[in-house]
Amino acid sequence: MERIPIIIDCDPGVDDALAIILALHHPKVQLRALCSVTGNGNLENTTRNAKDILALCQRRDIPVYQGCGVALDGVQPETVESSFGDDGLGGYAASIASDNEVRQEHAVDFLLREISEHPGEITLFAIGPCTNIAHAIRRDATFAGKVKRLIVMGGAKGTGNMSPVAEYNFWADPLAAKEVFEAGFPKVDMIGLDVTNKIALGADVREMMRIFDTPISRFIYHATQKGVDDNWDFARRPVAPMHDVLTVGYLIDESILEMQDAFIEIETDGLSKGQSLVDIGGYWHNGQCNARYAASVDSRKFYQLFLTTVFHEKVNEINEFMKKEWR
Ligand code: RIB
Ligand code: CA
Image 1 (cartoon, rainbow, N blue to C red):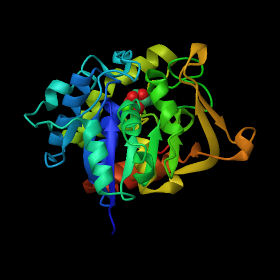
Image 2: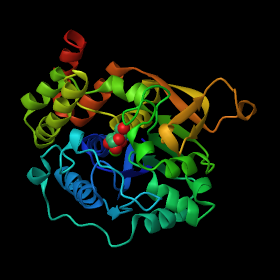
Image 3: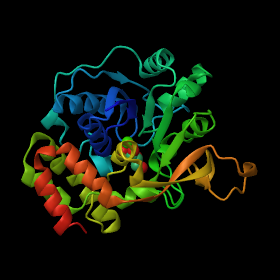
C-alpha cells in the first residue's frame, strides 16, 4: 500500500490527540512530524501534549517542532480550558507525561525546509489556528504551491462555536486563516463544524473505551470527560468533541464526507471575526472556487474506520456493536 506522507499542525487538545492517534495507527498514513501552535492551550501545553501523545503511542521517532505562541496580530488567543481543561487533555496530561523531547528548530523553519525538500509530496493538516502556516506563506511565496494538499479542520457554513458565526480555529487567528485561503494551495479541503459536530463521541463509544482498558482507550475515556461535561453544561449534549479526527478519517476514506466546491473567504474584523463565508452557489468571484467544503458526513462509516483502525485487536467486538447497537 502506498503511504501518504503528512505533517499535522495542531494545538492538542483532545480531538487533536485523536487525530494523531488515528494517523499513527493506519498503514496508509505516514506521519512525518507534528508542529505545535497555541490554541486549545498555551504553546507550552500544546507542545508538551504533542510529544507525550507520541510517547503514549510509542512513536518517539516522530519529531515535534514548536511553533507560534501568539496569533499573527501578536496576541495570544483565548484558550479553550472549558472543553479541554487547564492542561489541554482534560486533566489527563500528567498521566501520559514522558521525557520525549521536542526539536530545537522552530516549526515554521521546519515547514519551510521540509516542504521545499519534498515539493508536491506532503499533505499538510491544519487542525489548530493557522498561525504557523500563515508565517510560512509570508516568508516564502512559493510555499503553498509546493504543498500537495491542505486539509483544514476549521470554519463552518452554519453556526460557529465561538460566536454565532465563527469556529474556534479561524476565530483565534482570523488573519492567518484568511491568508491561508488566499495563498493558492493546489488543493484545500475545509472540514468544519457542519460535519464535525455530527461525529461527537457519545456515551456508548466512550464506555467501549473504558471496557477495552488499553493505554490508548483509557486515555480517550478519561481525557474526554471534560468535553462531555462542557457540552452537557452548554448544550445539554453529553458528548465529547471529535472535530479534528475527522480530517484524518477523510484522508483515509474520502467517502466519509460529501465535499462541495466553494469559494471560501474569512472575515477578520468586527462581530463576524473568524467567520468562514462559504460560497457554494457561485455568487462571487465569477463562480471560481478556492476550496472544497465538507457538506455532510457518514458518521457510522467514520466510527467503523476509527474504532477498527485504532483497536484492531477488538475488530470482531466492534463489528458486532456496529451491527447491533450503532445509533
Ligand atoms: O473548533 C474546533 C477546533 O478548535 C478543533 O481543532 C479543536 O481542537 C479546537 O482547536
Ligand atoms: Ca485542534
